[in-house]
Amino acid sequence: MGQHEPEPPQPSDPRLPPGQRLQRGWPVLHYGPVPRFKPQSWDFQVFGATASAEKHRWDFEGFHALPRVTVRGDLHCVTRFSMLGNEWGGVAAKTVLDLVPPAPGVTHVMVWAEYGYSANLRVADFTDPRTVFATHRNGEPLTVEHGFPVRLVVPHLYAWKGPKWVRAVEYMRADRRGFWEERGYHNLADPWAEQRYSYQEEPGDGPLR
Image (cartoon, rainbow, N blue to C red; front, side, top):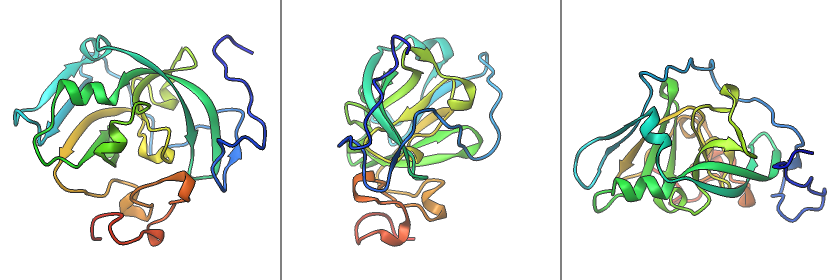
C-alpha cells in the first residue's frame, strides 16, 4: 500500500451511507468525451453576482499559485459505490469565495465545467470546509480521466455535484438546476438521505421545474 493510500474500510464502516457499497478502485465515469488540456488557453473564472460586478479570472499558473489545502473526504457516487477516506489536495472552495466575494443576496453557485456541464450548489455546501477544487488525490496528481487539471469535490454530497474539468463558478441570487438536475437527479443530493432523483424532492428542495 502506498504512503498516501487510505486504510481499507470495513463493510460495517459507519461512514458508508445507505444504499452504498464499498469501492476499492476508482472507476472512470463521466458524460461525454475527455477534453484536451491546453495550458496556454486554460483559465478559471468567477462571474455572475460578484460584489464588484466584475468577472475574475486566473490563468493556469495563477490558479495553481493560490493557497492550497489537504482534506479528507469520501466520494459517494449515485451509482451506489463509495470510496472512503480519500485525501484531496487543491484549493478550498471557500478560498475562491473569499478572494472574489459575492454580492449581497447570493444563495447558490453554479459550477461550470468543459462542454457546458454544470452543477448547482447552495452556498453553505460550497463553503463547507471539505469542499475543494482538487488537483491531487492521495498525494498524486489527478489523471485526465479523473478530472485533471481541476475537479470539484464535495464529500458530503453525491459525486455528480463535483464536476470534473472545472472552468468557472457563477454566483447566483436564485437557485437554478444544473446538468444532471435538469435530467431527473435530486437538486440537493444528500447521500445520507438517499436524495438520488427529483421525484423524491420535497417542497423547497429546489427551484420550480
